[in-house]
Length: 196
Image 1 (cartoon, one colour):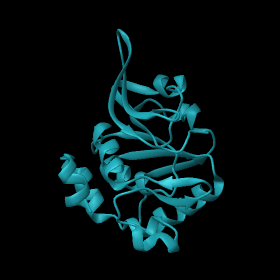
Image 2 (cartoon, rainbow, N blue to C red; image 1 turned 90 degrees about the vertical axis):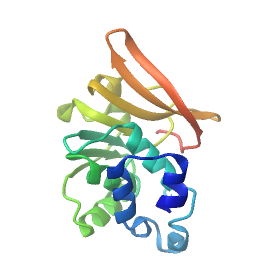
Image 3 (cartoon, rainbow, N blue to C red; image 1 turned 60 degrees about the vertical axis):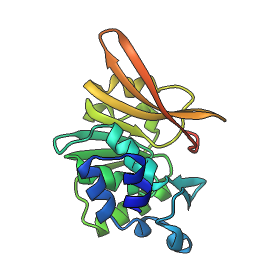
Image 4 (cartoon, rainbow, N blue to C red; image 1 turned 120 degrees about the vertical axis):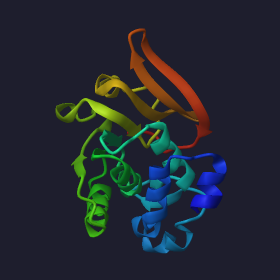
């Protein structure tokens, strides 16, 4: 999976590649999907949500420029796979999921794997986690119509917000906030479930 789907498409961050190699992706998907866990595509995880394609997980993590000192916010815990990748690369991760059932399942999987540097909450991720801000990186794992202002406000200086934007047509963006205001750079076309 890592060599053919991720390295072959240009992801080079060693920490991201190590995390993707070491994490058992099949443990994050429902039993009936496990035979396809390492396929080059998203999979259903229930509640109308998906686990992203492995390449997209790696790309988003690399784009966020996460490092061992980073404090990262993830909007959309889902099954916890992206959370676990971030946790392997960062100091601490704060993750928010709207669906309580998915959050609980993710918590069990992360605990079983010994992932201890994650803080979880059930709620509206578009509001962020203000009491833990500012964050050195923010990843949004569902497509928004526009960048939620609260997330931009919670970015540390020089940090990156990685977010899919759009409805029927979507693109992955890297958003930064500087003295001249908000800068959005499109990366690639993507397809995500909508941010609720």
